[in-house]
Amino acid sequence: MLKVHSPRRTVSPPVPYDRWLIFVVVTLIGLGLLMVASASIVISDKQLHQPFYYLFRQIMGLVLGILLGSMVVQVDTILWKKIEGILLVGMMLLLALVLLPGIGHTVNGSARWIGYGLFKIQVSELAKFAVVVYMAGYLVRCQNAIQNSLSGFLKPMGLLAVIALLLLCEPDFGATAVIMTTALGMMFLAGMRLEYFILLFLMVLVAMIGLAIAEPYRIARLTTFLNPWAHPYNSGYQLTQSLIAFGRGGWLGMGLGESIQKLFYLPEAHTDFLFAVIGEELGFVGMLVVVGLFTFLVMRIFWIGRQAQQLERHFAGFLAYGFGLWLGLQFIVSMGVNLGILPTKGLTLPLLSYGGSSMLVNCVVIALVFRIDYENRMISLGLKDG
Image 1 (cartoon, rainbow, N blue to C red):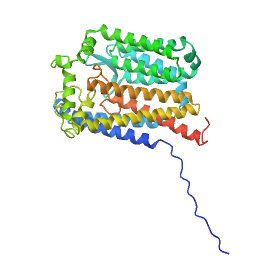
Image 2 (image 1 turned 90 degrees about the vertical axis):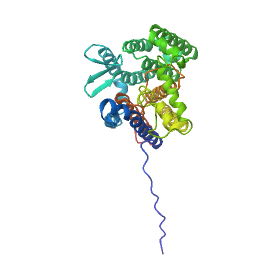
Image 3 (image 1 turned 30 degrees about the vertical axis):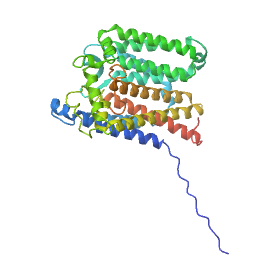
Image 4 (image 1 turned 60 degrees about the vertical axis):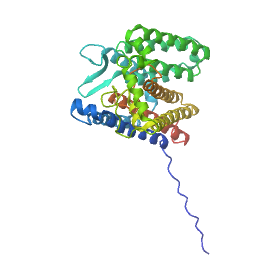
């Protein structure tokens, strides 16, 4: 008798990482390199006689970030919970050291960098990372206190106040606002009672307003963005040039490399105001693409955090929530500044704008999100103990 053999069913191996997350991250980084090259080529050639100096520096930061990220993605998430205290104390020491003459490096009146030669890092970027890791651990340890008592969320605010004070001495008001808002958002997602959250939010808001009006240059920024055309050649110059860039871009843009504003009209075109160059060269459609990519990135990170919470991996879940809040807030603030919706602040577009420290830390953040997603998948498949 003839034996009939049924065709063998091939079982595909489980996918270790989120392919959609990989796609959106690679797309953002690729677009960022393209726009940094376009926005910086003229100023780089004029000042340094190397048209792609900033692009090469950005690629160097990306390569270092990928190398560091490839190590981070191999480390179990629980290790970060064990070293959260050491990470926070080390970061606070760096924030203090950067203020010392001869150790910290001052650029445009702000002492934010530490290091030597080509290897300088912006300490506020490390502060954002360390605060998210610390808050994730604190929310796991003290979740009952966060949900039921006022002291539960006042305790971490004491540490955050010290960090904010050190950042404001640099000064770096933008990073302070992002850190405080991210911490508040994480506590809200941990189940903080609404009345406590509103009270704490109002306290932080009043403190921020007080700090903003304490310095004359901050008052000028707050009032200028309401009507930048009143002082188009003075305090409103940067914002008016940014708005001109958006106006020139129209629906489809002037074309890649065709920006006029980057020709020494718009200061910091390749860093804080890269979104304006995107609007001028790629138009409203290009801006929508960038907004869509960032929205998808943040939603995907939150989805990974939600998966971790459902698997009762609360530290990993809060970690993902914190990173999603941080990246989302920084993108919204940077975009709002470029559009004149928010007062001018020195914040870059994550994964897009020029900045070696930002790129390096963002690569570590993304690698850690990939690790959380990988562990979620392995636990769901029964290949790893939860």
